[in-house]
Length: 110
Image (cartoon, rainbow, N blue to C red; front, top):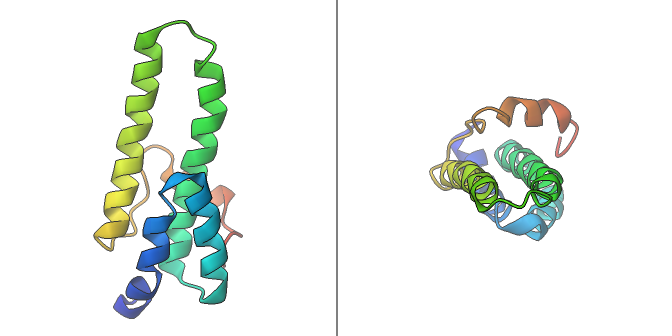
């Protein structure tokens, strides 16, 4: 990725981490001017949000504040990591699951 491409897609990359609606909005904004940097972060954030909601449904059935708070803390760290990478113009995958999200959503944004 070139510096020009990163600057072009940086706004959409940042927007994608702000709620699931931000991911959807960034996806449609990125369709106008394709940016590999923005596409990378859109795939990362979409995977995080979908995993958050899928596992959140399961974690919600536990009646333990320890399980719930651990769940939220885990995803908060992953979201902050991805968001800070988007702000600092880096295209690093999120630990543990980032490469998996890139494979699953490889056709998204290309």
